[in-house]
Image (cartoon, rainbow over the protein chains, first blue to last red):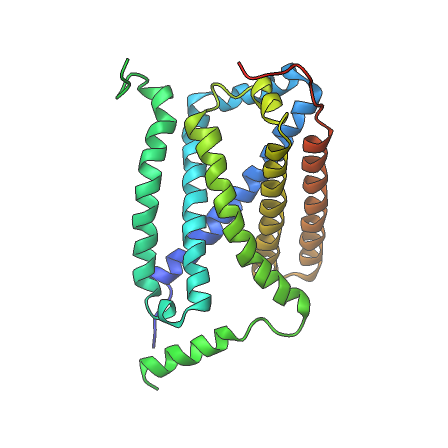
Length: 125
Length: 139
């Protein structure tokens, strides 16, 4: 019996769904906040100022992480769908997904959080 | 059945695209095509709006200036359209998988289609109706 639940493919699948739901929920909010631009500067900036609070900056990084994972794992899914070899090595591909994720996510998280938490770090004046 | 044969059989089953209706088939292809397109668009969006710039500098003027260029409006609208439809497609699959009682299922599917129309309309209106402001220049 091949066990699926609890293995790499299962977690890849579950995380893909969870990150997808998180992204679409934020996207709904994002369409709403951007629509305020039509009501002038004060309406727009009252809302956007919430996004500048440190808690939201951390959530912003988490969301970017969700987008990165969903996107890179999506490429893995497409490979599995169209390339037979990829289907056989889908578990190994999940580790490739995470390696690519870290390479992109860590620098992105650094540059996104630096202005909030350590504005002078690595800044040459 | 050896592992190889099992994998092969599973693979051949998978290679049969969703059958029964053209809608599911097109939805399946759209999921993949839109996913790749959104991947490029969203990486550009993240790089420009969240890394090179960030929410400290994004304000009314930032968006107004950006939307003086038709190309950026097109970029943002394409990202909006593809991401919303891709996401709605995803929610539709989740509803099929998890919402079993008939009444709730019909309600969830209806709400999902209403959301699609609402957010596409609101987003499109926001981008299209924003005025061009002659005289607004960078700097």
